[in-house]
Every structure is written in C-alpha cells, then in structure tokens.
Amino acid sequence: MSPNERNAETRSVTLHMVSSLDGFIAKKDNDVSWMDNPGSVYEAGVSISEEEAAAFVQKIDCYVLGSRTYEHALQLGWPYGDTPVIVVTGRKLPSAKKSIEFYSGDLKTLVEEKLAPRYRNIWLVGGAMLCQRFLELGLVDEIVLTIAPVLLGEGLRLFGASSMPDRWNLKNVVAYKNGFVELSYSATVDLSLK
Ligand SMILES: NC(=O)c1ccc[n+]([C@@H]2O[C@H](COP(=O)([O-])OP(=O)(O)OC[C@H]3O[C@@H](n4cnc5c(N)ncnc54)[C@H](OP(=O)(O)O)[C@@H]3O)[C@@H](O)[C@H]2O)c1
Image 1 (cartoon, protein in one colour):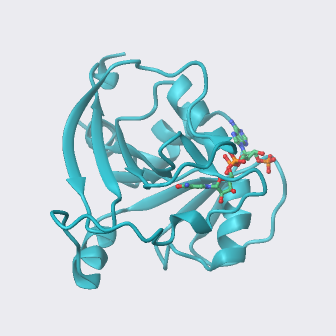
Image 2 (cartoon, rainbow, N blue to C red):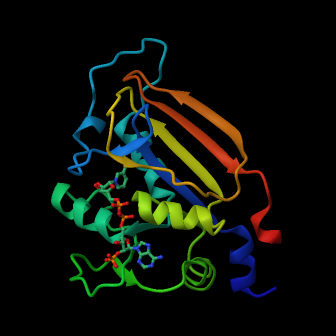
Image 3 (spheres, rainbow, N blue to C red):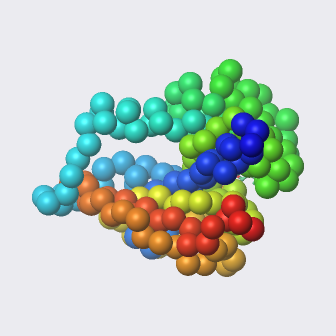
C-alpha cells in the first residue's frame, strides 16, 4: 500500500462550528460576537486551560475554509496560527500568510487528492455554504458542534436541506462552565467504503 493510499484510509474530515441554540452560525450582518462569553454560568461544567486548548489545536493538521469565512477571519484576527489553511474560492484572492493556499474546483478531488496525501486531521471550519457542500457530498467524517446558550432568531443557518449521511453516532458530550455544550458525532456509514 502506498503512503497516499494509507493516508486516504486514515484521514479524517471534522466539521467544526459554533451554533446558536436555534441553529445559526452568524447574524444576518455576519456578526459573531455572540460567540464570546454570553454570561451564562453552568457550575457543573468543565473549563479548559490555555495549555490544554493549545495542545488540542496543535493536533489539527490543516483547516479548510470558504472564502467568506476567510475574509471575515482576516477582519476579526487570524485564529489559525501557522497551521496550513486551504481557502475554497473561485476568485483570485490575495494571500495574507504563507500558510494559506487557495483551491478552486471539485471538493471530492480536494479531499482525496490534495489533502488526504498530506494531512490526517483535517478541520472544516465554515462557513455554512462550504460545510453544506461537504455534507451533501458525504465528505465529512465527524461533526463537532459547539452550542452557544443564545437564541439569535434569524441569521445564517448552519445546515441546509440535504446532508449525507443523515444519521450520526453521538461520540462525546462536554458541557462547559460558560454554558456552551460541545457535541461530537461520527458518520454512521463507513464513507471509505463508498
Ligand atoms: N459560528 C461559526 O462557527 C462560524 C464558523 C465559520 C464562519 N462563520 C461565519 O459564517 C459566515 C460565512 O459563511 P458563508 O456560508 O456565508 O460563506 P463560506 O462558506 O465561508 O464561503 C462561501 C464561499 O466559499 C466558496 N465556495 C464554497 N463552495 C465552493 C465550491 N464548491 N467551489 C468553489 N468555491 C466554493 C465561494 O467563494 P467565492 O465566492 O470566493 O468563489 C463561496 O462564495 C461569516 O459570517 C463567518 O464569520 C461562523
């Protein structure tokens, strides 16, 4: 088995998003400040230290972003450090850092031919449009959804009408002291067999 084939088998695409209780990832005007501590306190919850968070993030091999998330991340303050970032876009965008690559084209080809040979722990971090395309194509192995204790009423919906697969296995639940809950799911079907 070649290294490329081995990596294709072991690579994992994790969709991670922070959602409001009513399923939105941003307000209509793109505001995401509601993600900052909304003042909820859950005494029985856990909190993680900066060191623990840094150790977790260090295990991520690359991030995949839609172009609108990329542009918003540049405005808000780049949260991805020097970890490789692949921005999906049909436009010619200026690169803000050496760690950024742009990709335009088929998403299955992106995952299987461009990412899998190089990376194992691939994190798809938004936005809604790109995550929905990945879900429709069955390219997501895990979903990690962080639910914020806030109702937005309207905004940008995380999930669209058609997602693949439609059943997911709950793997882990973590409730945090600030009232956020993290739900981790794996795809029920073995996507590598498709
Ligand atoms: N709550 C959270 O966890 C979270 C996480 C991430 C983002 N957000 C927020 O979500 C908003 C952005 O989300 P969004 O859904 O509007 O946009 P998005 O998914 O970030 O970006 C959409 C863009 O990605 C490109 N794209 C998507 N699919 C493609 C494909 N198959 N082939 C080629 N290009 C493709 C297109 O770029 P071009 O138009 O350049 O061709 C498209 O316009 C921002 O406000 C951001 O802050 C929230």
